[in-house]
Image 1: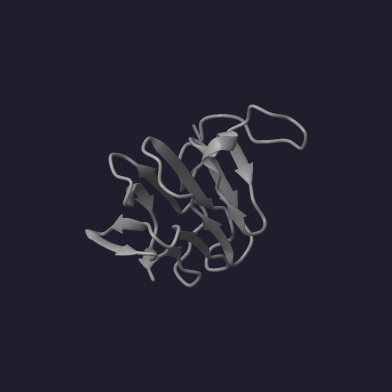
Image 2: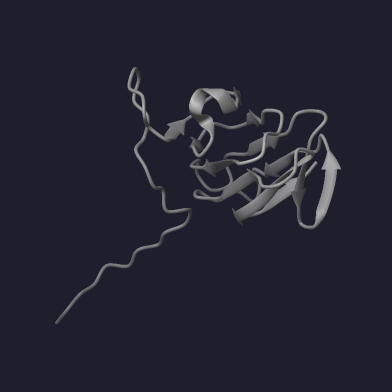
Length: 139
């Protein structure tokens, strides 16, 4: 008799190493409070994890060629994440662009592993959602 375990996996496969205090060169970071993403300090390409309710990630002014992933690691239905562009910028999601409009993983529908990847592909006017899992709303 062969018995196999069942595994349930949700979320992106994370490539890289998680940041440790005082150590550089890591591209996965846990954030437990609001955070302003910065292009010039090496944030581009990073994956940000959060399991803390009401964390807001504020995006920098757009510069072409940057990408960020935000992952909700909180318990199902207990956490929400907000991704907020600079006031003059927008986020294209679900075919719509609105300046200064947030993308939110709502608490009621959140699942551990929900994520969104946002990139500045070829525009200095808006960010584009290039990958997503879970229910994300625009405000």
